[in-house]
Structure formats: C-alpha cells, structure tokens
Image (tube, rainbow, N blue to C red; front, top):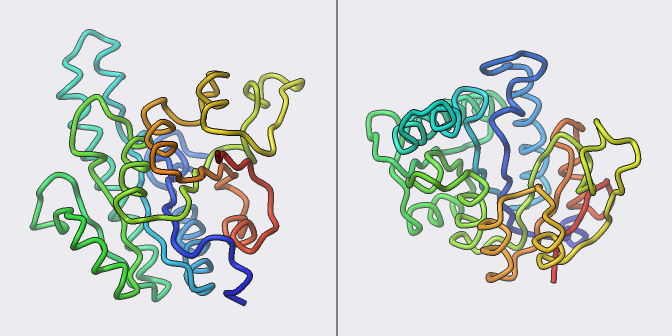
Length: 239
C-alpha cells in the first residue's frame, strides 16, 4: 500500500484553535484524540510525520500588542501555549500506542526535550512522531513560519496545513458563498493574490525550499490519510 503514498515524509501544521472543538477556549480532549487518530492512521501507512502546533486556543501574542502591551512578552506567552498543546497531543498519541516526543524551541528540560535538528531527525528515524513546540523560539514569527522552517529542517516532502475548510478559497467561504475554491496554485500566486492561508514568510520559505503546501480540513476524520493516498479534498500549492 505504501507504494501508492504521495509523500513519504511530511510535516503537519495544526492550529491551536483546532483543538478547541466547539469550546471557546482550551483543549477538547475528544478533538485532540481524533486528530491523534488521524496521525496514527498516517503512521500506519508508513509515512514519517512531524507536527507543529499553534497556541491560539490558549493565548495570542498579537492580542497583547493590539491593546498596547509588549509584543515580545505576548509572543513568549503564546509560545508557552504551544507547549501545553503539544503535551496534550502527545498524551492523545500515547493513549493510542503511538510513540511520540515533544521538542521545544524554548528550553524547559523538566517538561520536554529542547529542539535540535539532529535530535529531531534521530527521533523520526526511530519511528516516533515528532511534535514541535515553542514556534521558532523567536517573537514576531508565527507558528506557520515555524511549520515551514521545521519542514525544511526535517527534509519534509510536503507541508500539510490543517484548516477550518477543505482548501484555499478566494475569500472566507463561511462568510462569502461566492468564494472561489482553488484546486492548485503556485507559491507565487498565493503571495500575489494575498491569500491568507499562511503568512508571507511561511509561503516564501516553502517556495525557496521547493516544499509543496497541502491545505485541507483538519475537521474531516481520515482526510489526512486519504489525501496522502491520492484521494481526499485539498488545495495543493506547488511550483
């Protein structure tokens, strides 16, 4: 079956908001378990997978800046939120018997390992799901940028972006029923059209490293594996 797989090594970018489910804040354990189940299904296909997770369900640094606070401190607080989410996802994976490890861009050895590329690649070679926390470790960079950066460092064949909808649209389809859905775009087209699926730095970094971006709905159970197997519904960004 693995001969049919489109990409053999991928990085999945999951927003913190995806873990909320229908809640207004925090982590819905049932949702975390379902996402972990999708990751486990992909592992069973023989795909090497790493994950970058956001922290918007707990804290957003830009919200501090918008109210006159210090953006750097706010971003540091947001990074801590990603660690909480990473630990929750690791717990869900462990419950399913999937060995996983959390590597943080910010040193906190009592809680998780610190990130180095060599360590991450060694864990992946050992068959573990590698979960990256702490963003890039720097303020002013989003976890989308962290996703593109880690994808390049891990030698990922594709960057999967799990979103609220089943691909990239010309506008928010939940607000604009006339929004056009794209099946395929280039990185340059995403930047030129100002499509807000990922920030500019993330798209540019993916383009420079020739990494396709696959945008799909994180809320559709089993969709991750379907797309990797050549079906499913997504938008592919590739030059």
